[in-house]
Image (cartoon, rainbow, N blue to C red; front, side, top):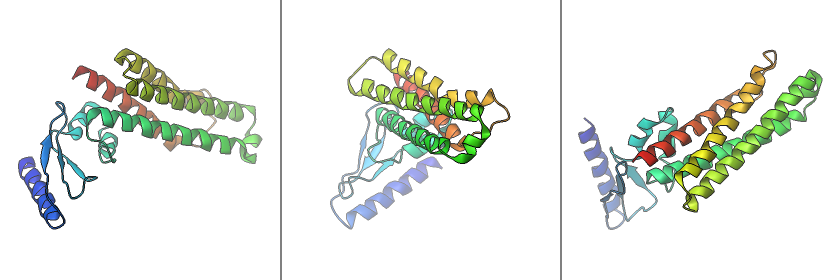
Length: 202
């Protein structure tokens, strides 16, 4: 079934490309997980083959979330997928930090007392530290740093990503204003760790 689906997709790409330019449909194998079909007519478009980035997503906890990242522009290798995951996780952490800063200014939070303000402050600091750790992880990759250094940064990121949830767990009567963001960031960071570990193994 998958073989037939791949053939149909390739045929569709060829038909679309021949109407607007020369076709350059070449499988590119840069590792055990990477198969890409590219066309000269639309260089920004690419199809991830059955053995491509989608395969490495089977090695992470949150497969569907990983799969969405394979569709981002420029993601054609496992390393690029990891960088995209780090970039998105960092962006989401910064958004969570900003959201918390806005919430802390509200009258409702001030009315809830010291416990809420303190917990939100803890969360805000955790997401700031998380964003820094993720950026350091990206810098480590770009500078050709060791895989051990990368995993150290990602381990720190993993801790920071759960700090907010743990802070609210200490006060069961308090409700987080960003539960969805917390879950999303936690899952992104978890996938970053899984991707980094998988790439090292292969």
